[in-house]
Amino acid sequence: MLQPALHRSARGAGPSQSPEELGAVTAELAVALPAVVVLLAGLLTGAAAGVTQLRLEEAASAAARQVMRGEAAAAGDTVARLAGPRAGLELRTEGEWVTVQVESPLSAPLLEHLPITLTAQAVALPEQPP
Image (tube, rainbow, N blue to C red):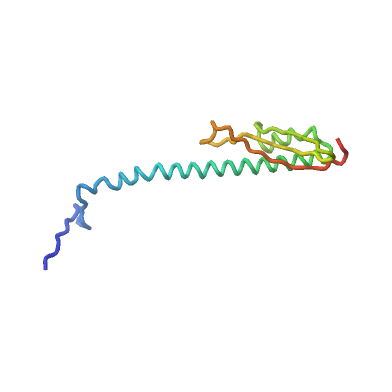
């Protein structure tokens, strides 16, 4: 029975690769690496959006607590401290209730040129009506 001869590499361990297969690993890496980079960038962008949304929610809640205590003038400073200097604050009165809306543009590396604005709201009943 004839068995095919195995080519040995220069180190003597395992079969050697044919000339057609020599660049296969490099080509596969060249195709897969951009996909991995795009996936990682997408995950980091999503994480940045999630963290920004959490900061806006916290800022809206803190500003609503200040409005409830009658300290509406200090709410803007609280929003800037918690959500960042680019965050905007809007107070709306609807009957006895005050709605606090905080919004900020999404600052993510891949989406900085897109006009994406994140928003959070909180509602408070002031101790003294406005």
